Image (tube, rainbow, N blue to C red; front, side, top):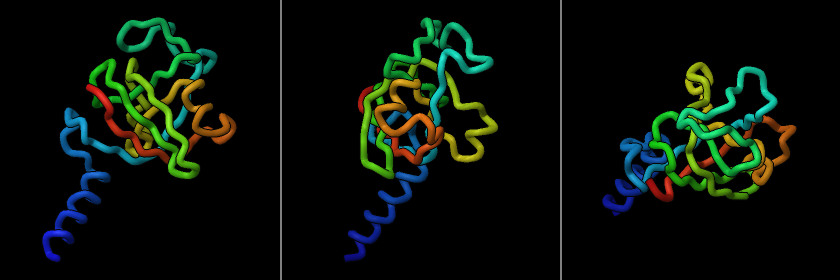
Amino acid sequence: MKKLIIIALTLSLLSVFPGNAGSTHAIYKGTASWYSQTDPGILETTANMEIFDDSKLTCAMWDLPFNTLLKVTNLDNNKSIYVRVNDRGPAKRLVNRGRIIDLSKRAFSYLDDLGKGLIKVRVKIVKL
C-alpha cells in the first residue's frame, strides 16, 4: 500500500514539475493562448526561421526543441490536438504567471472558441 501511495504522489508531482523536458513522458499543465499573423509585434518568421502561418498546427514553447510533436488537451472539454513546436514563447512575463504554450490560431480553434483567448491545458510530449 505504501508503494502505491508513493507512486501516486510521484506521478502527481511529475505532472506539476515535469523535470526533464527531454523526456517523452514529460507532462506540463498550465494556460494556453493563441497568436495570429495579424497580432501586433508578430514577426514574419518563427524562431526556427519558418514563415509564420497561423493556419498551421504549430505552437511556441520555450524549453522544447524545434519540431517536437505535442499533444495538447483542453482540460475543460477534453478536446485534443497535435501540434509541432516551431517558435519560442509565450513571453517570459506570461510564463511566470502560468502560461506554458502559445498555439497557432488554427490549433487553438480546434480546442475552444477563439473568443476565450486563454484555456487550461495539459501538454504531453509525443515525439522529440
